[in-house]
Length: 245
Image 1 (cartoon, rainbow, N blue to C red):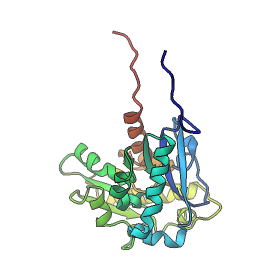
Image 2 (image 1 turned 120 degrees about the vertical axis):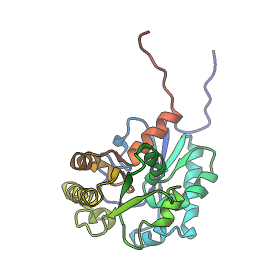
Image 3 (image 1 turned 180 degrees about the vertical axis):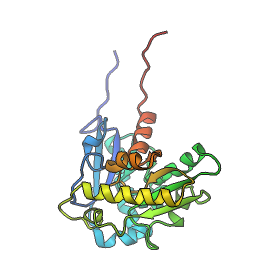
Image 4 (image 1 turned 180 degrees about the horizontal axis):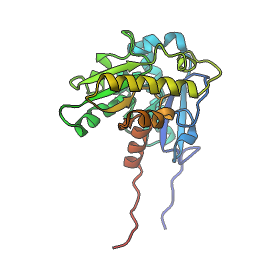
């Protein structure tokens, strides 16, 4: 008989999720809604970075990295087996966060781009839908940080979407149909203008609730934070196989 070991207050929370402090609704499918997942998660909220500072966060301002490093360390001490986030722009902090702990860190959905690209024909490209595709938003440095600087991508942003504004502006009320409809229209336009797209990657952690609608509209594989989180979970919590021989 072997004993089990304690040393912490709680157990069983496999995935740690670092959250920016926001108060807009987190619907199922969101990284900030625990019922999105089929396994236990543990949230850590980084406080004090409000909407007005997000542009500096998007640029990777090193002034902001320390709270995320501390969050990663605290989640590791709490016993999680891997750590993710709720903002794809944190890719600029990926290396620093990963170097600060001894468990896997996958800060951004953008990390999937190199893998997805290897799945496609050589004449195909990847479409990326981001919360902000303007000059101050998603750009080459984010792709380079994800190991995707050499990969052909086309980017479409939601910065002009009224339906997405409750998320980007941290408003109290959200009508989910509105961001869904805007995302579908942006995806359709992106694919129609770039028929060589072989798959879509959603940068923003607020977009997975609408991934099914996007896929139905463009008939392409859609990768997002949830597909990445599920993949990492399957790597850190292996299951035995039972079947017939």
